[in-house]
Structure formats: structure tokens, C-alpha cells
Length: 294
Image 1 (cartoon, rainbow, N blue to C red):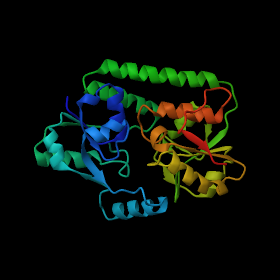
Image 2: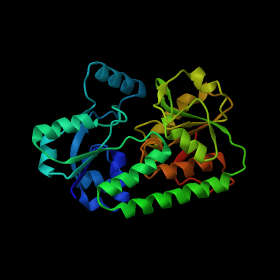
Image 3: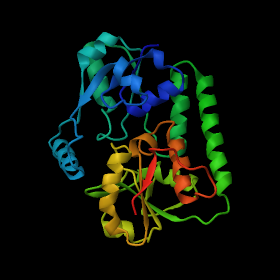
Image 4: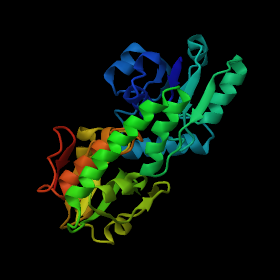
């Protein structure tokens, strides 16, 4: 099959299923594995926000969305030239990727008959389910079963290692200006790692909150996992968070790599979080995954 991924997480799923050679199109944000963006046709573009502050990014997003604008641009001609059989997209978050409805409209305009599969998980179990869903859609269901089974084994190993231990209260900050608490599958990651998620929206969309609301449950540990940032960017934002959580341990995490993208590396995220919460029970997190700032 000729596959096009309009999601960084879907690109990671495709490679995890051993289908990298079938992938012909990606987005400008598909950076894992590195070969994805350098060897495939980029069919979705967007504004480079790397030099913008979190507050400036939030203002830009809100302005675009209130005006009915799009945050992403589908390069329709490039897509048509790839003649895809299956396109992976989402409707979960307009800020994260191009909605599937935009893709359907473009395909109808182009006369392209590609199948469109929308991946919209809200919980960690939902995320694992999407791996099997993609595997079935691409004709390799057994690979999906093997991938999910292996990831569940790793989750079980973490669960066994932290079983019976005190569960520290953990707040997760997904954005800092303005502050957003984590939702969707992120609280599940904390629970799987042996923590008690507080001020969280498990299985629901992330929401804007006040610093007082985030601090009210008196979290013992604060994880800063900003969407769109790897570890260095997370560290810079975590440093600005410290003042709001006196007495708490504040950690930065590679948000894009381990927490916010619903791909196979979420299990790496569980293991990294467990290393923060229970360092004497599990192996340490790999270099570049986490860093304590306070």
C-alpha cells in the first residue's frame, strides 16, 4: 500500500509496524524517525513557531481559529501526485493536525479515492487500540497484535515494580502561557507509572486553568510536558513554573517524544515518569528524556 501520514504519531506507528517503506507522504512535523521527513514527500506545511514564545504561539492559534483560519496547509498537488491508498489523519485536535474533513474535501476535489482513517484516541487504551487499527487497515493485523502485546508487557513490568508503593500526587502542565492542565491519555501515563494524577482531565480534552487551580491539590511532583517541545524547550518552560509550586519537585520531560504524541513512545514516557516517581524501583530514564529543574 501507498501510505500518507498527516500526523507525527501516525508516522511513528507506521514505522513501528515495519511499514516505513510503504510511507510516501508526511507532515513538516514528522521528525521521528529522522528519515521520515528527509526521505518522504511533505504534504502538510505550517507556520514555524520555533522562535515564538508560548504566549505568542497561544495568541497566534487563538487568532487563527477565531477567524476560521487553518493552522496547517495541505499541499494538494503533492498529495495527488503520490496516489495514496490510505491516509492517516485525526479529528482529535485542530491545534495538533489537519482535521479529516479537510482531507476528505481535498480528495473529492482531486478525484482521489484514497481511504481516510481518522485516529482519535482519548485514553492510553484507546492509543494502543489505534496501533491495531492501523495494522488491520494496512493488511498486517498480526504485527499490530505483536506490537500491542509487547507494549502491554512493558506496562505490566512497570506496574509490578511500583505495586504497593506510595503514589505521589502529580500535576502535569501541558502548556505554561496560559497554563493548561493535561488531559486525554496523559493522566493514564501518570497512573501507570505509579503516581496519582491531580488537577487533571483524564480521558477529556486539555483545558485552560489558573496556577492556583493547578497548585490547589498540593502536588508533590510537577511534570512540565509542553506540546510541540522536546526536552530543552520543556526545561525553559519548567523554569518559569517553579514559582507556582513551592515545595514541589519540578521536572521537565521531552513532551513531543514521550507524552503528547499518541504513538508507541508513550510507553517510554510511562517508564521515564516511573523513574521520576520511583527512582529506586525502576531503571533510570535515558539521557535526553527528563531533567529536574527544582
